[in-house]
Amino acid sequence: MYYLHIYNSEKEEGSIVLPFEDMQPMINFVVDQYQKTIKRLKTNNKKYQKITSIWDKNKYDETLEESIKNFEFGIFCSMEITICYELTPEYNEEKHSEKTKRTEVIHWEIIKNYPLKEKEIVNLMMNPDYEFECNISEEMFSGEVTLPGAAYIWFEDIGVEFEFCIENGENYSAIYRMDMNKAGDDFETDHDEFYHYEIDPTDPEWKANLEIEMCRVLILLHDLK
Image (cartoon, rainbow, N blue to C red):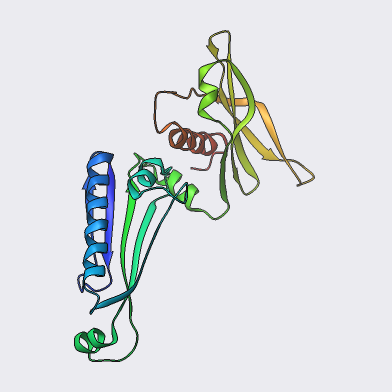
């Protein structure tokens, strides 16, 4: 599920939000809206000037459609597309009865919905002291692997570590408790306190689901409820 938040600074009603079950219909809609908007602004050169646009790209020469497909959506990571333009002095005075230069914005934000309902996890992730790091690449899913420190969550002086381990066809991966050491300069992993967890390599949201599960384990092991 995706949500498309559309904002137009020229509209009094502000913004709207549209839901999309799948990515491709959403991409088709956004690209069509973007192209029509650019064409409308450039065609009406007596009303609009200094038109610029920007969106999140992996490569500078990506098309908008390619960028949306390649974007790595996260729990708190949305994609933004923005068109900025100015009203010509004549049109600005006609529409707003003023001579102050106005810059208007049309903005699309694509948000991917995640099944995150536990308020404790949301509160944890929203805390400024929360930090998540993942060191797993999808190439690791194709064979055996032993990777301590495959992923971490740090939160103040506590945390968890995910060890990604597949040996002889058996999955020994687990999420371990971490605590700040007595010197207060590093974290120590407690290999006696852990929960087994297996990444599903066929799940396109494996990274987000790993982070969510690590949050659950951190809350359980450190009794944060």
